[in-house]
Amino acid sequence: MLASSSLLLLRWRGGAMTAARRGPAGPLPRRRLLCAASRPPPKPPPTHDADGKPLPSIPDATTLFKISNPELLLDPQKRSSWKLVAGVVAFFSCYLTYTAYKEGLLTDGPEQLQQQAVEMRREAEVQKVLPDGRLLMRDGSIVRPPK
Image 1 (cartoon, one colour):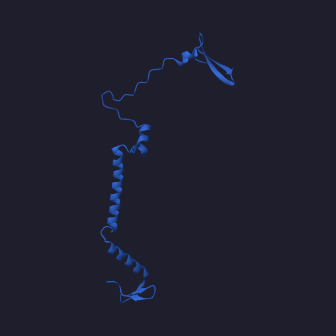
Image 2: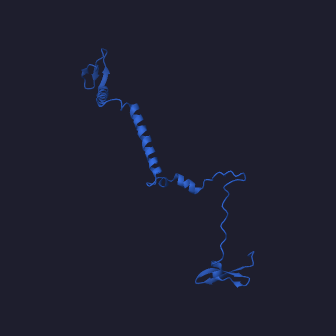
Image 3: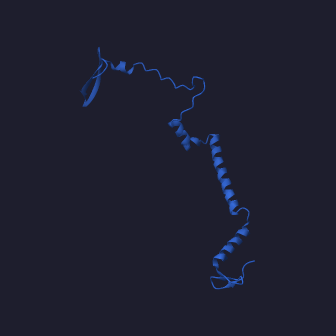
């Protein structure tokens, strides 16, 4: 049964089973149960050790959620949010510029790009290179190689 001196009574009331607690002097008034003094709040965990050094912080679920949630990081009212956006834009701009430079798109002018396109088209149409250096095209014509 119960370890304390109170007794637990079960009653059938309105189609449902209810529990009523009975103390040593009779049923406890409902008001006394609702207005009982609350327990004091628990002591906060220590923040410093015996030497006075701060303890390392323990990441909890709230901290990890705040770190990994982009909606909390990007607040348009904060300046730090716009710095993050500017950093991402600057990174990708530098990456695209570097890639275009390595591909040769920045150093060549539009005329040189068109000339490369014509040469690539001509190379695709070449069927065979003749012994004297002339080119046999797919349509059967023979042309001199560009100088």
